[in-house]
Length: 404
Image (cartoon, rainbow, N blue to C red):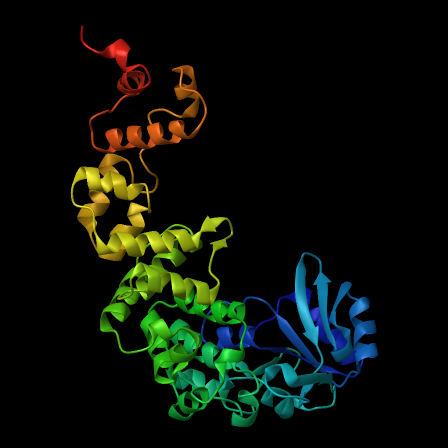
């Protein structure tokens, strides 16, 4: 594993100060899996917190993330690196909130790695010596494509790790050791806040080429029964739908997420789907109406549009490109494209200002008239702004258009 020269200065500076710095975590794991390494996490052994901080300040701008237990962000030019000393966890109370973390620069590589969740995440790389430190055979587990816990006693300290196992299984397509599945089944997921639960589910859905792999691990370990009871139980149609839509090319992660959530709710009605979204606290994400789109897809799946008029009406409620993918209905996708409503509804023929110009006073009647006009448009009885204007005039001044 090569470290870019701009980062190598950090490792060399730590070595000159008497320490030893390692690349740790996901960057090492992904490199060993043959995938591009992303964010760089560095763990420095042998330097106390004040000494490490002084070394880092000679290299670039230093931000304190957790100074009391030796966690910093170092900016090297345009890059940011997470740097920490080894940390020891102590149970000072009940549950994962009762864990107290303290810095221990002399903990040793093996003991420092013991606090990590999975063996594949417990591999360290020393770019100065050019060697891996792999005390728990994470490299072997990558070759075997298997997820194993580093230590069963430390693994259970954070219940979120159970959900991480499921999403890693889905993302990487790895098998999960039977003893790890059994361990996950003992963990109290109810104490986790909804945002942490949703974070892992979102990764499982968006990053898995075959979500059913991780989904079934969550089912085997009784995770769904704890966090989303509506998803508990064997449901082959749901798994088939999830894996199928995961292969669909959809622009935008949030649009794709709405599609995957609708697939995950296969077999549920709209009310049950709304309960699921409430449990996970899913609403708008990055400005996109994930919740509304998911619910609309589930409702439209129960009554798929057949005629052109039904297709136009459905486009008022959900994106037909997504609905066609959910239903595996290429004919619907083609029909929606022909009608120009694949992603957006048919534009209205008139808006409120045109009704005001036609002499309709502001008030509730305007909304009623616009809704009626929309129905005329979707039914094909009114198709141009000119026809719409005449229709409105007939409603506002019926005597003027009545036959003599």
